[in-house]
Image 1 (cartoon, rainbow, N blue to C red):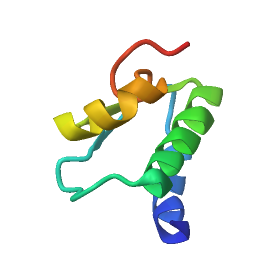
Image 2: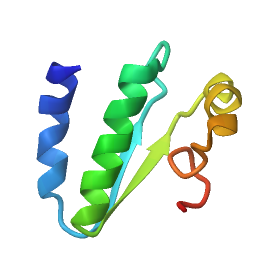
Image 3: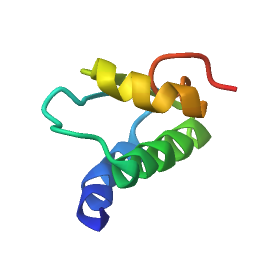
Length: 78
């Protein structure tokens, strides 16, 4: 996960607006990957940048939405 976080660091210097990440090439999203996305979303929002995820698999939605993660997967942020 540390390597993925290092790869995401340049996104934290993005100008206010939206950063889009395409997840369609990801085989499975585990809790470590989910934590990384939440941390990235939190840090981007603190800088006025919106995170938009695309390529979200239906199986991830059915697995994670009941856990209150709609905000990360295109729903409303609390």
